[in-house]
Length: 151
Image 1 (cartoon, rainbow, N blue to C red):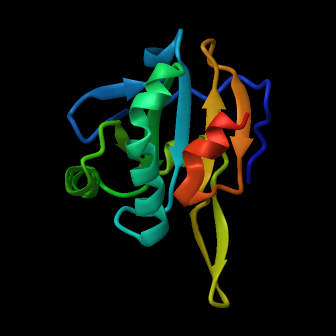
Image 2 (cartoon, rainbow, N blue to C red):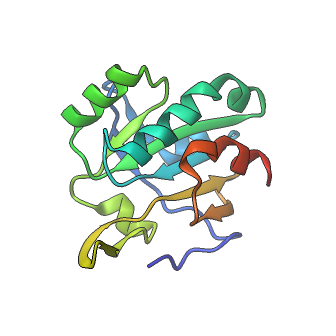
């Protein structure tokens, strides 16, 4: 699982977002980045988290944060999810699991007694120099922005 810790250099990533833009970690040099990993588009917790970030987007930007969401869903799924909920920030598809693996958020999960591999809901706050400042492993999906601001 997660071997990264605050003070580590954030692993590089690159993918095409739901808007057709190529997004990589270097794009955020000089800005703070909320890089959040979530299990699945259009599920209750993931929708609550995305909508919480959307509803507080202006305030996050004012405080110097940019936002990127990552899941293993397809680009098409991200396009529909983003459009349905009017999400203003990039969602990156990671169907080959390169980003989730690099960040250590892919692994065994348990639900209703069943064990399976999936993405663990995790958020990384990355500073202006690409260094991890904080890692949230217990994300409060409905109040995620408050968690971010409490750091």
